[in-house]
Image 1 (cartoon, helix red, strand yellow):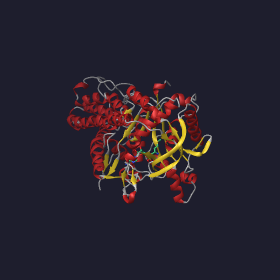
Image 2 (spheres, protein in one colour):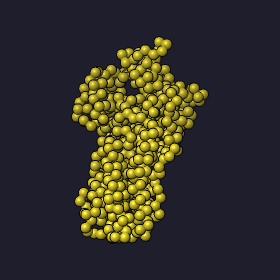
Image 3 (spheres, protein in one colour):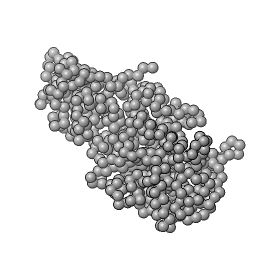
Image 4 (cartoon, helix red, strand yellow):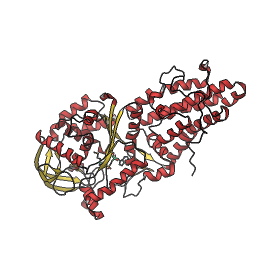
Length: 524
Ligand code: MSP
């Protein structure tokens, strides 16, 4: 497979001690849609997710739970695997940073950075937020209650003073700025790119990359009193998973550099500043792109454990249905912006877009075929179709894939869905205009042609929407008797002025199962 037909994408690895909530589900969902899309589009995809299991925060949580950190992480890491199953993610690998392969890779990148002269021993004195596992400058802090100091994220910081190894980040300002300039698509969306550039232009300090005040992490090679900074360890997961330090391995050559690291806006700096600097320092190619999405609030309020307003993915999936939740999260908010989760908005998408638009289209067309065409794919006239109103819809549906592909390549999931829905709504309008039910008596052949074209239109929607709503689209494709191997994008027609007749088009005379509603209305 040529390298440009390989696609490696990653979600962040999640802190195990958090209860998985909608924010975690969202980042990986976006990756899942992209991974499924690329696979259907003929790519050799490698989709990685996993858990971030080291660091002071996890050590503290394990101590609070009264168990050793390894048993603790074994237990809680399972919550994220369960989330992955519940959300129907199609990851190819689930990495845990406590795995042997990862210790090996983390120590190897450290050794390489050391050999290349980018690591030195010193003393760290400064502010650290355990919750964020991040260092802060005095100037970034505000005063909290009882004399405490607070980081911009809201986390309380503590003063840390201990021997520490440093990475010479200050030397990477110019190389990073040059890299951003030469790779204008490296950071998306645009507004985030500008933020990162001005942060780097503001000057970079050397970064403390080891700690001696706790034990739970990867020991520094040749100085095991020091534990590697959890972010250096965590970021390295992206290369561990493709075989690093064996840079000649088949996996590494095929998949690295990653095509995309998908992250939330809060962790962009780690992926767009520190990680490329570490990679450059270790003479490893830098990933192609980082996309930073926005944050969800719950009915207008920041989601947090302490406020007690966490939205548990399982609960909303039980209430609304899995594909409904997947659709909502990627349709409701332009990807990259912040968004608000509300039950009202969810119900409005389910009843509007899914039940009234797509569900209704499928249900009424397939019922008419079932009743009036002997439950078989009807025959379609080979000429004179241009005069039918549904013909315009067919041409539009044939033009969809290249447009949707462009949106997906920019991670504009909302635009991809809106592009498809424009045609779904048009299809419903042309059903009304064509009134196949009235043609039944006056011109049964025209009725058959209209219905044939409409089920061809539905076949296109069902194939194109699989990445977003895999289970529902599988049902739609079953109802059209489309075989498994004819569900990839190569089975779609993509020329604007084409008729439906090619080898992948539905074959007249094929029996169709009795239609069943796929997108029910939600009523309280
Ligand atoms: N462990 C680090 C990532 C290391 S990657 C090498 C981490 N973990 S996390 O569990 O705190 O967060 C993981 C992801 O969840 C981030 O992308 C973050 O943006 C996302 N979200 C957490 N809360 C969120 C919302 N309320 N809304 C949307 N996404 C949010 O950071």
